[in-house]
Every structure is written in C-alpha cells, then in structure tokens.
Image 1 (spheres, protein in one colour):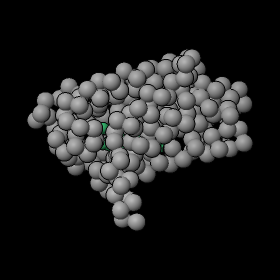
Image 2 (cartoon, protein in one colour; image 1 turned 135 degrees about the horizontal axis):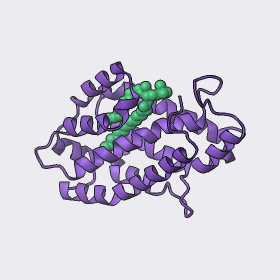
Image 3 (cartoon, protein in one colour; image 1 turned 90 degrees about the horizontal axis):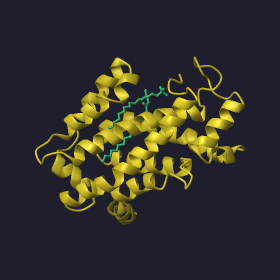
Length: 218
Ligand SMILES: CCCCCCCCCCCCC/C=C/[C@@H](O)[C@H](COP(=O)(O)O)NC(=O)CCCCCCCCCCCCCCC
C-alpha cells in the first residue's frame, strides 16, 4: 500500500497538470468543464503536497470542484459540458443569484467564477516564477500575485490567513523540485509553454462573463 502511494506520488508532475489546462479549449474556443476541473484537481494535489498549512485553501477549492462535478453528474449534466453552455442554460432557466445570495448558492456560474478568479492568480504567479531570479522568494511572488487578483474579493481575515500561509512556501529551488519537471531551465521552458494557454482560457471566460454581466455574482 505504502509503495502504491509512493508510486502515485512519484508520477506527479506539474507539467501534466498544466497540460490539462491546455486541453480546456475546444476547437471553437469553448471552455470544457471536465478538463478545467481536472486541472484544478491536479493543482490542489500539488498544493497539498506542500503542507497542511494550505488545507483551508484546498478545502474551499475541493468544495467548489465538487459542486461543478455534481452539476456534470446531475440530470442536466449535458448542459454543463462547456462554460458557454452552462452560462446559457443557467441564465435561460433563472438558476443564478444575480444581485444577492438566495436560492442558488451553488450555481455553476458563481462557483466557476471563484475558480476563474483564482486562475488569474495562477497566471500571475506562474509568470513571476518563470521570470524570477534564482534567489527570488516564492512567498513574495505568491503574495504579489494574490494581492493583484484574488485579494480584492476576499475579506480581511482570509487575506491575512492567506498571506501567512504563503510565508510557509518552500524556497524557489525546492519549489521547482517539487514540481518534478526537471532542471530549473526545463521548469522555465515548461511555464513558457503553458502560460499562453492558461491565459487564453482565462481571457475566453472573462469575456463571456463580462458579456453577460456575471463578473460580480454574489
Ligand atoms: C502554492 C501556493 C498556494 C497558494 C494559493 C493561492 C490562492 C489563495 C486563495 C485563498 C483562498 C482562501 C480560502 C477561502 C476562500 C473563499 O472565501 C473564496 C470565496 O468563496 P465563496 O464566495 O464561496 O465564499 N474562495 C475562492 O476565492 C476560491 C479559491 C480557490 C483557490 C484555489 C487555489 C488552488 C491553488 C493551487 C496551487 C497550485 C500552485 C502551482 C504553482 C506551480
């Protein structure tokens, strides 16, 4: 059993996780929810391997992932194949709380919006990692990326807890090792490959949400 767990762990490689995000866009640029959710699952697994101090973050991410999986497995699962079809279905059927929280606290639209905002954090953080010098601090890169993105949607206590957790991040060399991608040069190259795709997934979602006025869903 222990061996099986070890083998599982050894297989873990951040390249595969980021590749999942690459596979999120369909040919006609729709965002595929199964792949999007699989990408987040992989990232959460990576975060868990960094220590239990991140478990309050991973709990929230896991619960949002689970809400999306439940929509996909529900009787209207086919409506949730892409973010585009989900938005249309939920809006057409009045399944979204638009101005204040009410009957639909677990709508796909508001849940995915939270992950979407976190994707912006990821994009900013990975870009900082990619261009960082050897002696740069991951905690600083992480909190700068956070302050420019997710922080503005979080209350004071969450911001405080998040910034404390970031301080527990390992230094750049160890962080790169845990990514299990290869040499630092290979990590940087991999990030350079993955980032444009992550950024495109973010942009496509952002434009869709903006077009339907969904960027502030409660
Ligand atoms: C590697 C370091 C990990 C840093 C993670 C940075 C993100 C910090 C997010 C802090 C969230 C704190 C938990 C609570 C959040 C909720 O209040 C809040 C609002 O939800 P509500 O409207 O339902 O109430 N939720 C959210 O904003 C969604 C947060 C989702 C966070 C997903 C984080 C996954 C991190 C994956 C890290 C992978 C790093 C890979 C780098 C090579």
